[in-house]
Image 1 (tube, rainbow, N blue to C red):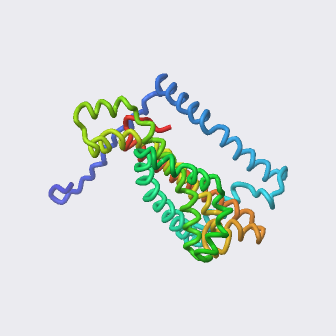
Image 2 (image 1 turned 120 degrees about the vertical axis):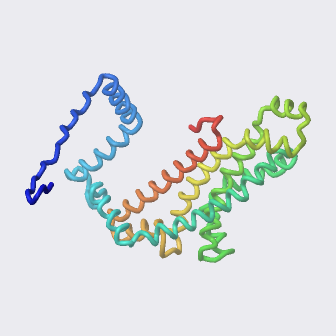
Length: 283
């Protein structure tokens, strides 16, 4: 501040810091309960990972076969940051995504139709059970002979394996609709289209989401096997290639990455189920 050539400096006014509120008994109790819930759910997993790290670091396990988790995490982070694993992640997600989307596009409509036509379901059930019990990996050489060793055979074997969980879950969901709900809707004059859109489809949606979760897990499992045969890109190829080169840290890094992708897919489907099935709590 200046007044007739005289400068006066005014020091800033410091506001005293407010003390943090004391931790109340209720907050402490809620924190303890939250910690207990986390430990009850993830305690065994955390204990397993801690035992792995300690055993590998102390030499109780052969570190060339079971490397420490910190080395696996460093390898995974380096592969993602450098971009070495990004191409493999992209091609694996493309293969599994196309196959999973095709299984949903075929399995859900077919399951809804078969669930409402008992005669068709009885006629097709034996052959469906035969195909379902036949391992997709056992049929993979047949698919290679028919479709070649390229992308088509890899996507088709994943589609074949992931089709049956969603198809059978959809059929079961339609067949388990409460008959009293159908009778009540018919008594109010509901037609076939209204009955399907307002009663059958909403009642079958929880079972459909269960099938989607099983189908997504199956797609990721078959992805590994498909990429281990005749592939030069993908996470499954990285697992096999790292094993051949005895890079067990890279091998486990790719395995954990696949597990994280599976957990992310399952979490997304659970969130979608909670959004579209508010009357039915997902388990």
